[in-house]
Length: 293
Image (cartoon, rainbow, N blue to C red):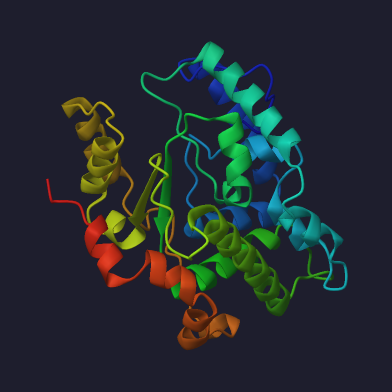
């Protein structure tokens, strides 16, 4: 999706797929710095042959991580990325690209889109994909924030050299700005005027990260049941095989702490209390727990 993006090719075209992948990795391997960065980022965010659709938005010039390149005094880039002004151009491109992919490699059941950047423009996403089924995964933010900072520290190293480095404080500041806006958009999209979760959205399912990690196949079964999607033994076997071949930590262990980035649990819990109370309270988590298969 990052090399020769048009025309798109089918997954079954293994020769052309390999050619494009080789181009991508050969360029990174020419630099020892880039090779090390790929290893570091893979520990935080594993690399897989099937990519997230954030790369489609990136092709359209909409990629919130670009804000790392602006200095502390320059708020224009950060404001533009986080502002809910018209981003339809990016989703116009996204829909066109997915339609092109579908023309050469239509899935058996449905397309699966995954990137956290959709959270800034969920209404726009649904205008382009009105029949979309939305799955929102919730995780304790005292785990998310330091993890996010750690990932961005690794990714930012690829944009700076030793004489023009990026500070940990700047990363922390940007991550907090990003998280504040993410939570604001989620709350605006998901709640009624009284602050309660809007139950009228039937195309939405909430799951928790903890339940997903404890019982991944059970949670996926819950998703398929909720949206009335077709389940098969072949599909379940494929998931078992994938989990066996890709255990957590295979591409490196992601290590981080709250104190490393100047956080403490109490401050984070207070800062995002409304979100936590709605989506991460024990009652909510119990209701989202799938039965063990």
